[in-house]
Length: 122
Image 1 (cartoon, rainbow, N blue to C red):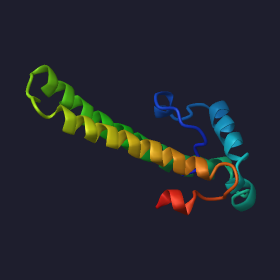
Image 2: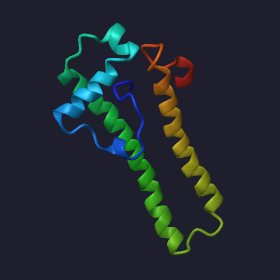
Image 3: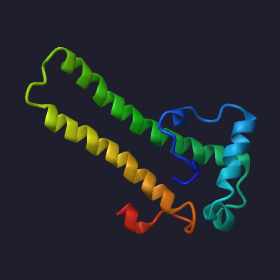
């Protein structure tokens, strides 16, 4: 989860598309302790593999949010949600908080640790 060193809610949907962008992302990864202490042997191609899995994980989370938001808006505009707004709003907030907690876990491994904090993981 540490291969992507920044969180960008909208622009993070698009992975690096050219060699310069890949080199920039790899250079950012090379600045964190995980790379320096454990994975300094990684090549750019190996980095692309671990980056892909993290990017896909984040994309899946975003897709879940839209899978919830789409039907919510559809039923909202058809006025079929009477009495459900509080519950559905709470579910949407909890889903968003899951993304925030995931980012807080990642941040815990970007500066001093080589992995995410086990306390934040729990």
